[in-house]
Image: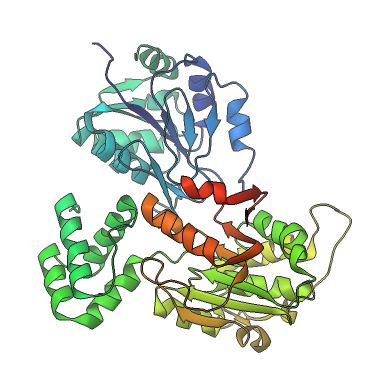
Length: 189
Length: 279
């Protein structure tokens, strides 16, 4: 399978996903050809320090975007604490302080749904370890729009709820270990 | 059920043609989601919604209120309020009057945060505080100065961080009692602002899409927090123009934590910490 013509990668995760995301970001080439959106649950009051922690080992720069920022290839964009991260057309992000969804703000479902609408079959959606169901509905939307869906192998997850919920709703294209996810992403060009 | 692009256009057009409301420059993803919520809450089809909008003006007002987002809290983002306390407000301390506009004030929590902070800085009497929103329901709620206690215990943490503690000096602790500014009634689950705070601000309806400065004063400080995220690029620029025209020299604007000025208007302001100063 040729892994070409993708326009964006979006990764959702919660409890137990921090190490996985760190490992993925440290394995991507510096010239990764597309933007990577990260929608990770975290404590509402832990607002700073998360980007710095993720940046320590990352090969690509990570930022918490401002509203209407343009997404650029080879960079990672972390949903800011206490905002939903939407993807608008033309590679722009939009933020929202609407009510929590699945007890979460940012909500992975909302990020995935809007990214699926914006990128259709050119999107790669990935769900990692986590302790609630957020992301399951969004991954289905990615699938329905023709995008590629990847779920971290629940056997490898620190907390399986998020991945098993995603797999119940969608037959993911790939159920991968962290290393397999990395090998897949490295092939994108 | 989802809201299609066509539904969305029809909705915006129906509002525009039957009322003064124009949502065509709102941020599309958020507005679609809110529209979906309105349809779900009313268990209504898109066609029914459009017919009701065309037939019933009171319903239009209701839909507009339901579609706007009203998330706010007391001293939301304490680091911003610490900046207001230690670096922004002190710049205006020698003014004879300090004019402050909370644009998009929602239910008023940040208006009361400002009043409390002004009082602590001995600037309360010389400040004139104006607060506006498109939604008259939230303005009425703001006037009451009354909030749920149980869901809002974080308010007290924020208060402590901004009013009691000093991030630049950990040994400093100002033991300001909560009841100096509000009463907490746990039995009835209420936080109620003191009357001297409630009587101070001028509340008024204002639509950032249509209205110019309807307060007829210029400002030293404009707070517009997590409002422009719901607007597209063009409307954001209109709003920045409006604020720029209505700020005094040396005046400044404070936006939401992840809001910024994109495009031509960026050159008209200088960002220092959490504030954008008029050039």
